[in-house]
Figure 1 (cartoon, rainbow, N blue to C red):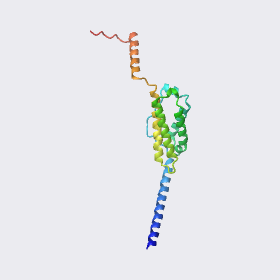
Figure 2 (tube, one colour):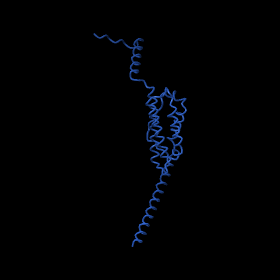
Figure 3 (tube, rainbow, N blue to C red):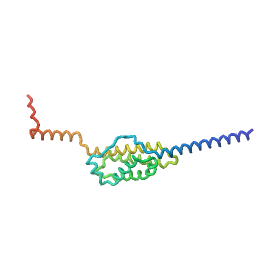
Figure 4 (cartoon, one colour):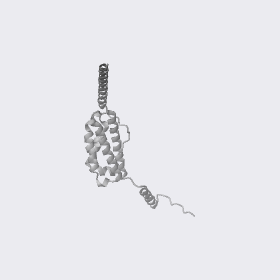
Length: 189
């Protein structure tokens, strides 16, 4: 009786293992097939740099390289993302370490760190033994969003403070008034 129970339990375990292996192979095939799909960028926001910021980054090789890679990422397939995850990581490391002094601020440095972290996460997902296409696409989308946030932060370095804006309006008002383009304000009694 013990032999029959032993044989029965061994055969059940064997059948169970075969079913799990078949399920894994099917999931793996489905994952590989979805890597052939193009990335669907979930953010429709596009950020352009202000002319002052563009002038500042025009000589920064790491930024130019990262910009080109991010544009390629937006048009790539899952397989392209897997292939470029290591170079994206290296580019973001370079971006983080070569930040020019003229752009160095706590906010910009924080955004550069976020980009580096997202690149690390993408690289980890891309180098997993059992890759999940949805995870890779999700992190790639997050990296695209963070790139736009980085550019927004660069732009903020060149935005005028509200006080500066008020002073500029006052100067324009005084200049227009002195040129007699505005009527003099009546005196209050």
